[in-house]
Each structure stands twice: as structure tokens, then as C-alpha cells.
Image (tube, rainbow, N blue to C red):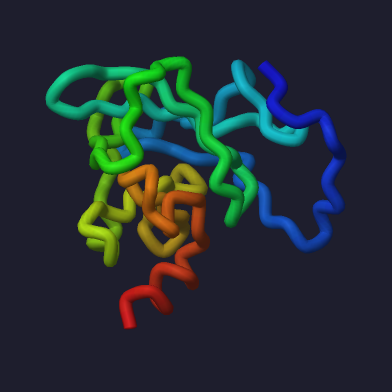
Amino acid sequence: MLLNADKLETSDVAIIDEAYCPKGHSLISDEVTFCDFKAIHVKIRDKKYLTDLFISPLVGDKSKLSLDKRLDKKLIFEFLCPECKCRLPVASPCSCGGELMALYLDSSLKLSKSVTVCNRFGCPHSEVKGIEKLKSMQL
């Protein structure tokens, strides 16, 4: 599924082209693309249901896609690996009351080589952010 076929000037845009769960499974999916870039795919779960979520790999872009129409922007979801269903690690609490979930950028699985996304959809921090943004948000 292609959400936006417009080409980007990528010189000023960081693109996440690798992301991993804590067990080393890839979270990048070619099922959905954002501006021709493969999406980050996670499962999300709350007390009522489990569904797929596709997140834009463009750092700072808030675009997401889920085919589940029951998603409420006020809910906080657990983020899981779509392959092994392990919970993604929490990098930090978010100022909205949610959590900033870590997506590892390489197979070393180090927090220092990760990006974060808030697990509350209505949050201003619900887009992929680089680890340097996490440090500034904690001040």
C-alpha cells in the first residue's frame, strides 16, 4: 500500500531503513510505504485487542496507518514485534503519560543506537525521534 507517491528531497530528512526488536527481528516492512520508503511495522495491544500499526520511517513525520478503526487517540498501547510478539523496550517516560518506545537501528541492539516513538497516538511525540531528541526532552 502506497500512502504518498510524492518524492522527497531527502537531503534534510532522516529515513529509518533498519529497525529491530530486542530479539533482533526486523521491523521494516514492504507491505506499506510512506513517500516510497518502507514502513516500520509493529503490533499494538491494549486490554481489548491486538492489531498492526505501520509508522512512517521519516524522522519527525507523524503519519501512521492501521486498518483497525477502533484506535482511540487517547489510549496508550504496548508496542510488540510483529514476528515474535516481544514487547519493545521503553526508553523513557513521555511527558504525556505514555512511554517512548525504543526501536533499535542496528543489530547491536544498543539504546544509544535507537530512535523512539510515543505509544499514545495523540501525543506531540508520537513520531519517530532520534535519540538526541530524547535527551533534550528529558531536561
